[in-house]
Length: 241
Ligand SMILES: C[S@@+](CC[C@H](N)C(=O)[O-])C[C@H]1O[C@@H](n2cnc3c(N)ncnc32)[C@H](O)[C@@H]1O
Image (cartoon, rainbow, N blue to C red):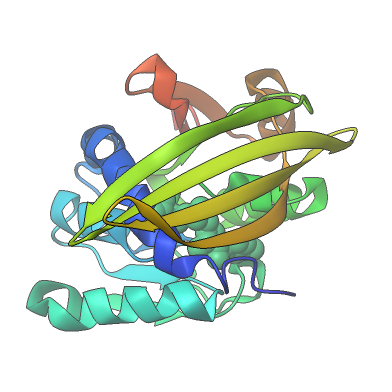
């Protein structure tokens, strides 16, 4: 499978950082008390991995990241932090091909579910049902749009580093019944003059809360909203188990 982040990794990790100011606290709250291994699905450069490590100090962490470009950032971030080096194992496979512990305390899938097609999601829900320990849970977010609608171009990130300013722009168009294509443009300015532009695109499977519920039910799983509504975050567990 192609690495959709091969060319954009240098911008993606930088531009995800501000979002983690909002995502971190509800994720940490949702993981409190977990001591069994935690999988960080599509860990990217490891912003979430750091949150997980702090929130569940007794748990081993398996960070699954198939993009070599983003995994390089992840390994550097883990390698430089003594408290992460001891506890975080980085796996280069896709989630469904990775050798994971047989019993899991939690599975975290932040900003990643749209990379899974419906069959991939089914396999992921089955993995949760098979491997989560009693009291275990998954934490994930659903990102808009919830249906295959066009999204007009907008700037979603702006970061200044030294003399350079980096802007991330995105627009989406429908690509199938449950699929959109995101078109991303990353613009670089030096001293406010254009210094470079990179365009990428990737497919993204859309999912709304109703369908999430329908898919989880047959696996004996239920979802609960968590965190501020605008973050679209959910905890998934066996419900009352
Ligand atoms: C938008 S990034 C999110 C990174 C990180 N979770 C964060 O929020 O900072 C999506 C990540 O999912 C990864 N990914 C895509 N398909 C995957 C799969 N099948 N299994 C595991 N990770 C996957 C990508 O390589 C990428 O790192």
